[in-house]
Length: 102
Image (tube, rainbow, N blue to C red; front, side):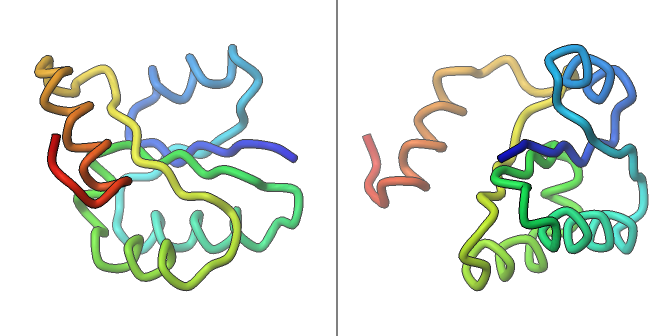
């Protein structure tokens, strides 16, 4: 099983490639959805990482795939331009995952 990155930022893509995670650089909403569908169609892909900016750009389409696809796991990640409010971000991630506010 492998991971795949869909990024709007070349630095994020390069960093993940150094960690052994392949990916693609996209800037338009239709390219995000195309890359997501292509990565999801690969039976070897277990996790797809999508940068926050792209997730915000295609929130409805990505949410639909998260709810309907059995695999892969689609995970939003911050990129290097992400906010610095890490405790708020972690609280939101936990709240979204567990369904209750901490």
